[in-house]
Length: 246
Ligand code: NAP
Image 1 (cartoon, rainbow, N blue to C red):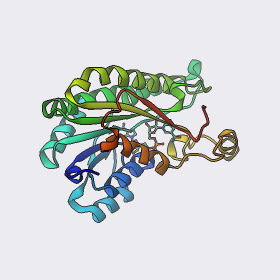
Image 2 (tube, rainbow, N blue to C red):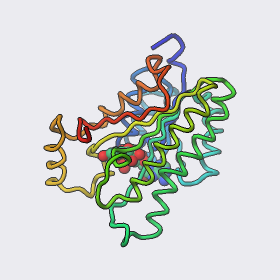
Image 3 (cartoon, helix red, strand yellow):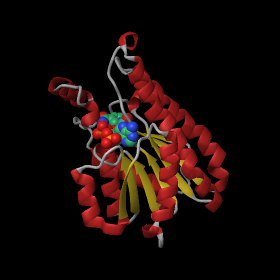
């Protein structure tokens, strides 16, 4: 970490549990100041607050509410500091065959996974462009590059985020803002709660590294994209799946 990095603020969406929580913990451990949000706080976010004091802030906001995201970005800048890094992590899925999938569920996936990512990036980008520095990391998924039954809409949302990553990287690169996407494979979080033990074991068996991902495996890679070592990396899509899709 270079001098001054410890004062940098990173905003993490969906930081109340799962991967987002691990990313917050990993960044706090590396000395960043972390602002995070989701729809509701958890015991884990309370504990982070207790442990890290004014280096950590948790907000309640809905990723599918454009105005709430705009206010959140302003509140974070005002109360916590200018945002150096944004991790677009909050995401939802709903496993169903498309022909039978509920219309509201389809819309919710697009609202959170795609529109939320667009609105939040837009809200923090203005400050990054003004200051000529910033890092955006979009959490996508291996379903953006490989087909899996029952997740067509979720896959569409992750493919959209990957496509946005590349074009936005070209757009904001001249102002020293990097944009990358990180595609985890299967991790045992609430998001994959619909998969049973047998299905999870079968995925682990098909994975060259013979296990499911841990959120810590992915959090460290997200931290890499924020680090000085990744200063010349932009527009990239990095898969962290133990080799499942290789
Ligand atoms: P998770 O355990 O279900 O956690 C999701 C997080 O997003 C929670 O903090 C949740 O908090 C928040 N969230 C959900 N809807 C929200 C909304 N409308 N507004 C604000 N926050 C919201 O999921 P995860 O596995 O950690 O997934 C994190 C990211 O990794 C997602 O983008 C997911 O697509 C991606 N991913 C996961 C896997 C996997 O195997 N788990 C694989 C590939 C990619 P609240 O419910 O309190 O709002």
